[in-house]
Image (cartoon, rainbow, N blue to C red; front, side, top):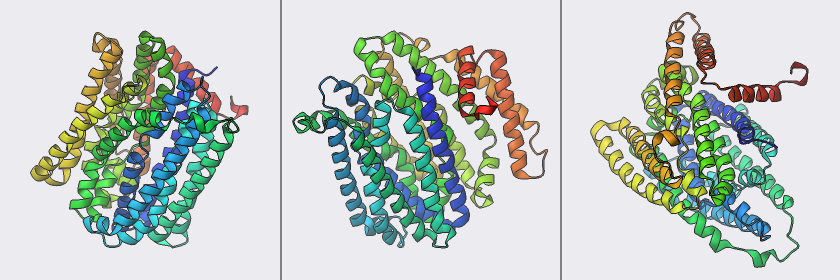
Amino acid sequence: MSTLSDKTGFLIVANLVKYSIGFMVPIVLVRALNQQEYGSYQQLLLIGNALAGIMTLGLPASIYYFYHHVSTTGRRPALVLQTVFMLAIMGLVSGALVYLAAPFLAQRMSNPDLTGFLNIYAFYVVFFIASEHFIHFLISQDRYRLAVWFEAGETTLRVVILFLPLLLGFGLVGLVWATVVYASLRFTIRTGIILRAVKGFSGPWAASLFLSEQLRYSFPLFLSSLIGFIGALLDKAIIALFFTPVHFAIYTVGALEIPLDVIFQASVANVLRASLPPLVQEGNLAEIIRIWRESVRKLAIILLPSFVFLLGFSYDFITLLFTNKYAESVYVFRIYLFLMPFNIFVFSLMPQVFGKTRINLYISIGAILAHVALSFLLLWAIGFYGPVLSTVITVLFISIAYFVVTMRLVKATSAWELLPLASLLKIFTLAILSLIMAYLVRGFFDVKWIDFMACAIIYSVSFLLLAIWSGVLTGEDKRLMWRWIAKVLPRNMR
């Protein structure tokens, strides 16, 4: 039987492949497109990501909760059908909104060419949103291996489809059409698999539909997502609306989504969403706290050292990946990096597993009001960098609010009970010592990428040795590492 660490590991592998390959896409695109074209593509992604996060109505997250709660009543087929149907409807609505709003969006973003691209991109939005149920069902069904293989294969297919028109010389128009082809294949395959895999459609499933119950749970999540995505994308939206596509290209390179951050945090969050609700039903708060502390500690071992290294080598990192044309992006990148440590905690899922999604909504409302006011205030005061500073400050206050809520939900009496603060401090200290070791060899090699890789290797090896020596890596951690190394090695090397 797989442990929670093993289940998380499966999702980490999937996300590692997915985001590592996806991380290469912007690196290639900044070389294949000029800054105007790359800025236009990023504007399309901004619109698509906002709709994908908002218009799913919180339904994907509700799958984790209802899949187990309806198991004794035979309503799982109804859960699948109503979720697939509602997401398909929302995909159509979203695509129509993009198509109709294209001229207005192009005008507001100071990019007349965007209208034609949005008319094509609307089809991508339809298919993408309509297929956002799949991985959530696989995880709820404990089919982690299939989730890994599917994510890896899907990501590889996406890269091939996106890069092919660029190689054939079709430019940005070909790239936009390629996103539509990818999304249509994604929708067809995902929906076909999930519908075929569910048993029980021959019974009176229509009488078991519970749309209103699912929507009552998911609607606060939808409102939270609406507010949360406005908050998450607000800084980019402000830059897109008040600056040129070239400025937006520079900003989005700096606002780079680091895969390590998303890979590990998202994997842990999904496993906890699927695993903690039964413990909540049992009232086993002690076990919830234990799992939570371990999750925070393990995330910190990965994310804190990543934060320290990337902050220390931020200029080298951005200019190496995106060329010196984007040197101005380094300042945005450094500010954005301070969001990474907050991803250690995954606070926002705790009200969800307790079935108290209204808490997410209330915190989101307070956060967005503060974020909007602070963003425009800082935009007026310091200009280009104001919105990103507002983002970091807002996330700090959100984390504090969720921490207080989490302590009350699990009835923790102190921060020490809920968080492994001593371990966090030790990990950060080891990361600083490792950074000093890496700086000793900085500039030793004349070739820029070789010098950067040498520093990264020195840093990683130094941190690993210090973590083993200091006991930051426990015996269980080391056994887990060797177990996963054995899984990925060829059989003749194990």
